[in-house]
Every structure is written in C-alpha cells, then in structure tokens.
Amino acid sequence: MLGSSRGIGTLPESQRPCIFMIEQDDWLALWQRASQARASGQISRALELFPPALATSPRAAEPYREAASLGLDLSANLAGVGALYRAHCADMGLKDDECPARASHDRLMREIRYSVVENLLAALKFNAQSPTVQLQTTRALQAVGRADLAWPHLWSAIKLGPSCYQDSLDTGWLLATFDGIEGAKVQLKRLTERWRSDATALLVRTNANQKALCPTGFPGADPQPEQFEHADLVELADELVGLAHTALALRLPERSEALLPEILDAAARLATQLPGYGPAYLAEGLAALGVSDTRRARRCFATGSLLCEQAGLPVRPSAASDKLTVALATARACLLNPTAPSIQEDTAPSIDGRPLRFVHARALRSEGDAFAALDLCGDAVAEYFVRQPPISYEFYKGYKILAHEGQYYAVPVRVREFTIIDGVVCKPSRAAQFARFRLPRWVIDLLRRLGGRAGRTAWSLLRTLRRRLYAVPGVKVADDFEALLESIDQSEGVAKIEWSVQPQ
Image (tube, rainbow, N blue to C red; front, top):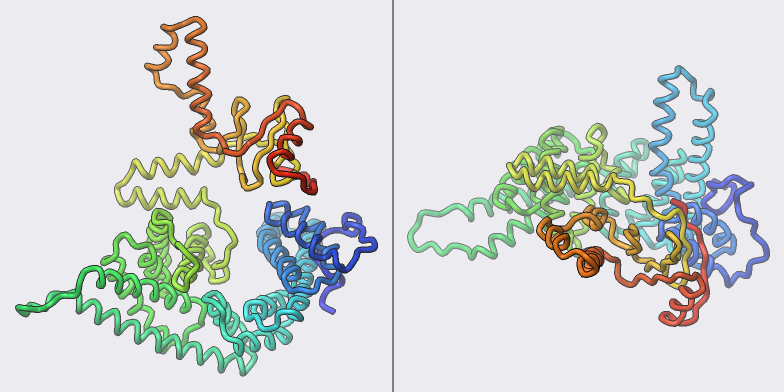
C-alpha cells in the first residue's frame, strides 16, 4: 500500500469528519457535494467532503480522479511554501530537521502525494484505457520516488496513444526523465526522430511559402489569392507553436537540436508577415527559449500574450487551439517566473492577471502606445484594492445569502466577485467603486442651482441610475431573512437546501 488512507489525506485526525453507516448508493450525492464545493472555491470544505465520499467505494472513476486533481492542485499551490521554509532555514542557519514548521509541511506534502497516487490507482480500475489517467499516475508515482512502478503506466499510455496534444507533450517530458530504462530510451529516440522528420517537412513548407509570396517577375504570373496566403501562414504558425513547444519537452540530441535555429528564423519571418497574430510570436518565443535566448523569448511572449488576449484566443477547444492553450500558459508562466522557465509549468491552472497586465503594459509602452499602457496599469493597480467583501455567506437554491448593513441579499452563485455600494450589488470594477462620487461638473452645478426638493430628487435619481449601470442582475434584496427565502422559493420552486459557509 502506498498510502495509509483513501482520500485527500491532508487533514489531521482530529479534524477529519466522522464517518458513520453510509449507504453504498449515497456515493453519488456525497461526490456531487464535494465537487460543488471544489468548483465554488471552498477548498477546506472539499477536503472535508471527499474522504467520506470515497469511503463509500464509488463505482466510477470520476470521484477518484477529481479527488486526485484536488490533491495535485493543492500540492502545486503549497510548493511555494516549501521553498519559503527552505529560504528561511538557510537565512537562520537551521538544519532540515530543526524547523518544526517545515517538518509539518513536508509531512503534509507526503500525505497529499500518496493520497493522489492511491486515488489515481483506484480510478484506473474503472478507466484503464485512458492515456491521460495513465500519464497522471506516472507523474504521481515519480513524485513519491517510485519510478520503477511508474514505467508500466507510462508504457500503457504509449501503447494507447495520446488523446490530446497535452498527452503527447507529457509523454515526451516523462520519457526524457526515465534515464535508466532501456525501453524509455528507445521510445524517446522514436519521438525525437519523428519530431526531426516533422520539423524538416514544416521547414520545407515554410520556405516554399516564403518563395511563393515573393514576386516572380514574369509577366502573366497568376498570384495566389490573398485570403489563401493568409490562411496558409496562420496554419504554419499554429504548427510551429506545437513543434517548438515539443522541442522543449524532448531532450533533443545534437543532431536534432541543430534545427532549432532554423525554426526560430522561420517563426520570426511568420511573425513579420502576421504582425497581429499572437501564436506567431508564441512560436518565435518558444523557439528562442529552445536556443537559450531568454531575453528574446520574453519579448516575444509578452507581445504574443497581449495579442492573444486582445483577439480572445484560443476560441474553441480544437486541435490547434489546444496547442495554443498549452503554449500560452507556458509563455505566461515564463513571463511571471523568468528565473525558472520550465515545461512543467505549461499546465498551470491559473495565471495571476495583475502582474500579467503590467507585462502587457510594458509591451504596449515599447510599441509607443503610452495611453493604452497607462490604462492597463490602472486596471492592474485597481485589482489590488481591498473591496471589503462580506465575511461569509450561505448557499440556498442557487443563491449566496448574505447580510449587509441591516438588509439581506441573495446573489446568484455564478457571480464570483461583487461589492455592495449604497445597497446595490455591483461588479467589482474601478468605476463601480467610485460610482457614488463621479458626476460631470456641469450636472452638479445644475442641480445646485435647482436646489430644494427637486434638486435633491434629481440628484438621488442620477446616483441611483449610475449605480444601476454596474449592478449585478438577478439579485434579490429583503429586510427580513424569511421574506428573502420566501421570495427565492416563489421564483425557483421548492428544492432541498444546502448550507455552507465561505470564509474569505
């Protein structure tokens, strides 16, 4: 047995929920509650609900996979705490076993990793034909130091074949880490040769396309229509993104690594021909990272990330946009952590948008667009403001119930962030925060000249109208708690109530 208990395994014994006689058919309801808590960001609540859900021995893979995903996310988020402890111990001259807090953290991380392994192995009993689960199990076993047990799962994933671009990338990265297994060397060599063949063919197409765009000089030459030329260039840029990204995952031998400068030149030409297409810059940045030109890579990543955000890319989860999604996450992880760009960061679950906006602002400033850069800096700074959100709320039939200044509010669950201004639930934007103050000067002067009751009424109406522009739709307000629940019942119908408290 790799782990001592099935579940997340991250809570002390005193805090783990007591499990009484639970019917076997209740696993679905328990899992749904745990899944909802995780989706709404209630991590501590999800950690409490997953162990009793898995203790009922679910007859499906998804509960185990979701519990494992929660553990993986938690492990990734806590990794920075370990680095912080190591830095503090080094500063204070403490040994590894002399810091109780660090020892507790290390023990917690071990429990999380073992629980992830156990949950993934349980999921494989129901879904052994999934290459994604096999690859996740390989990574999890490597994290607990069992590479000998990890190789059979990686081999199973290879035989099944990748189900998406991310699987292909993970397979290449994992093969590059199995140095002592002969079968892994053979498979890595095959992947490298395939990559070299694809790179050579793509470079031939890129050079041919480049020559086709140049004028021939012969009279009567029939040039290709412009829309087809643009489509060809876009297709080449998308393929270059995947090619350059895969090169980072594979530890390329010298013979194949010699193609990276040519790929960089081809990506740079495409970026020149497609100045407004973000993936072309991402391809150039990934290729620059492959030849260790970190400065050029960051410059291209900043431009590509900004263009992708402005264009709303990726649009849909197609094969090309899947490559773009992973490459974009890699580029942004490199921008936010330039000291250690790593292929393992390509699946970062989220990127902090505030420092990323500063990076985009610097890219705009370098292009001479100072006013747009100032706007982005203002948006980034505004998100650091403390909005004083409610301390807690309760869930009831698709609403968050909360109390604020003597009134009760029901906010739809889909609304993640909000603020309350003069009794109105608003979106947390800079304009909404100052909506009670901002009115044009000529309007204020006019209201002052009116004076009396008419002026006060007009002033109140204008302020209310301005706040309503930022109001969240679907909010219910009542002076009494029971009246609010009755209003929800009338609009939503009778349903079961689920309570949970969300600490901020």
